[in-house]
Figure 1: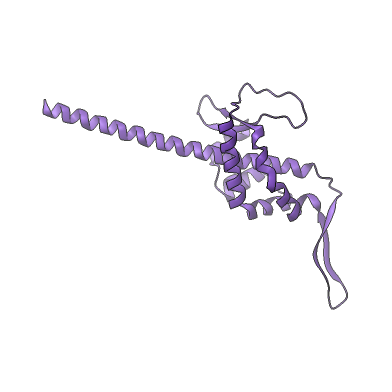
Figure 2: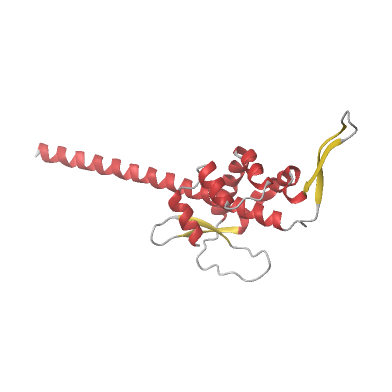
Length: 188
């Protein structure tokens, strides 16, 4: 009788430990999902804001001092990709996380974040999205953390026209997205 009780206690503790471990793993994955989603949304919002600037607008950069030979080291660069403009965009890019909702893949239970507010006023299909203030505040917090911790990398990527910024910044440079999640996001 005593050994049966001992076996039941060991089994109960083992089950409890496995359950706790599974809960921790699930929580870590959800944390990874929100960080990845925030990074990818940040990239989308930055790319969209850059595309709205007239490509003919330029800004002068360099030194305004006159060199010994009488020349100046001034050059003109596109305003949209200037460091000052990119820093301005980063000031409120995370505010736009309120325009995103959560989508849970029914097969994998992975969470992705999709835009739920149209930029051009056209209706959007929101049947797959969960609209929740907890989701948007978590996404905004993750975005702000990413922007603060990776400001130099973000400026570097957007100061030049780079392809696949989402993959390069969110997966390769910052490791915020794992490969499986990147592929899942790209399918949406």
